Image 1 (spheres, helix red, strand yellow):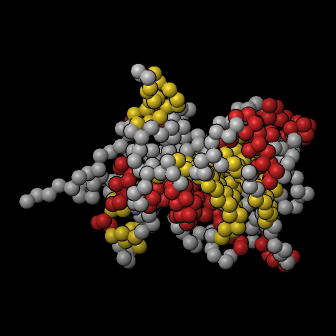
Image 2 (cartoon, helix red, strand yellow):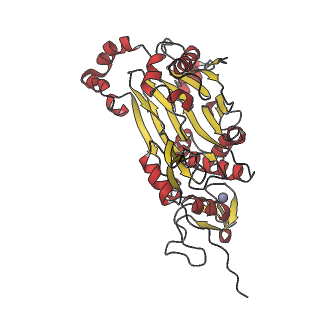
Image 3 (cartoon, protein in one colour):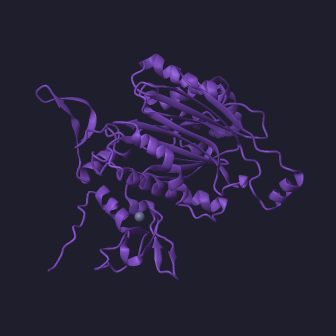
Length: 427
Ligand SMILES: [Zn+2]
C-alpha cells in the first residue's frame, strides 16, 4: 500500500510595519510556499526518506528557516540509510559558521554538503558495518534550490515554463564513463558478472564488491574508491516557482525524467507523488523499492497553481519567453537560456582538493586549525593542509588549501587510491 503524507507550510502573518522595515533593509520578503507529498511502495524495505519543511539555521529564529527533502536508497541492509538519515543534516550544518548571513550560508552550502557527506561516511565506517546507501538531499531556501547526491536517486526540476531538467547526476558505472575512469584510476576494476563459462551478465559493476554505483555513503567492504563526495547543483528559480520530483531508482528504471514530470502535471503534490509511483508500477511492476517525494515551490502572492499541464504551457510559454520560446522545444536547452532558473553552482568532482576551497579558519590565539571535514579543532602539528606534502617535508606552500586532521587526510588519500603512508620507526 502506498503511504501519503501531505502538509503545507504557510508563512506566518507579518505586521505591515515589519514588512516595510524588511523592504527597507532589502531583504527578500516573499518567500515561496512549499507544498509536498510522498508515496512509496516497498519491495525490500531499504528506502528511507527525510522531510523537514521547517528547519532553522539558528534554533528558534524563523527568519533563518529552510526546507530539506531527502531520499536514502539502502543496499546490503538498512543501517547506512538509517545512519545517514539521522546524522547527515547535522553534519552539513556543522560545516557552516553559525554567524553566517543568509547570503553567506547559501554560498557556503555547496562546500558544507561535501564536508557533511564525507564526515557521515567516515562516522558510519567506524561502526564496522557493511551496508551502503544512495543519498539525494535537497535544501530549499527561498527561491534557491541546492541538490546534492551520491548514487542514483535522481532529483528532477520541472519549471513553470515546462522545461524538465535533472539537478542530479546518476553515479552508475554503466552510464557514467567519467566515473568508470575515476574508479579504475583509483585501483578498482570495472566489469560485468561472469557466469556459465565466462558469459558476462548484468550491468557494469566495480570489483571487489560488485556494486553498480560509483558513489555512496557506507559500503565499507567494497573499496574506498566508492566515494561519498556528492555532485552538487544550486539554482535559483524565477518567481514563477517550480516542482521537484525526488525519487529512488525504482521510479527512474521505469520512467524518464520527462515522463515522470509530464505524468503528474496539473496535480497537487500529494496526488502527483502517488501518480508517479503508479505510473512506474504500471510500466515495470514492483521490482525494487519505489519512493517518490514531490515538492512544489509556489509564489505566495499568486493563486496556488501546480505546474501547468503540457497543453497549456505551449501557449503561455510563448507569451512569457517571447522569441526564446523555441528553446523550449529543444530538450538540450539549458535552463538558464529560457529564463526559468538562474544556475548558481555546479560541481561533481570526486577530488576533495577541488571541492573544499582554499580558505580555512584558524584561531590565532590558540594555534588551532579546524578540520574542513570533521570540524574538530586540532593543533597544527596533528594534521596537514590538504594540498601540502607531508608535514615533516612540507611543500613550498605548506598551508595552501583547507586543513584536514590526520584521520580525514587518511580518508582522502584512500579515496584517491593512494596507499596510506605506513609509519616507519627507527631504533
Ligand atoms: Zn577531520
